[in-house]
Length: 138
Image (cartoon, rainbow, N blue to C red; front, side, top):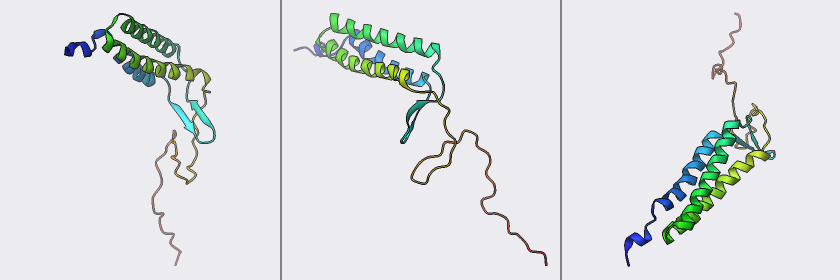
């Protein structure tokens, strides 16, 4: 029994790291997704052509790397390629979810008091915490 037999080669590591890092890179590129209780998910701006192309290229290269590691790699490469395939499927779901999400501007409303967090996009400096005392003329 030799130890290098159970360690993946470069093909396996590429098949694992490419969809993992590519997925996080793609999530950093796309616009923010908002989840509003009772309303659903939506994005704040349109997805640019560069973001669509980068996502498609990342998916294509990740599928090619997993296929290569599974086809020509050792047993350890095939195991790592299966994990990389699952990560690639995660990347594909993030990519195709953008097609169905509507584009809306985020609301600027007060919190309802039930644990919601107010999103402020046009914040102003608040007034005094304690109002000044009104003095009655004597």
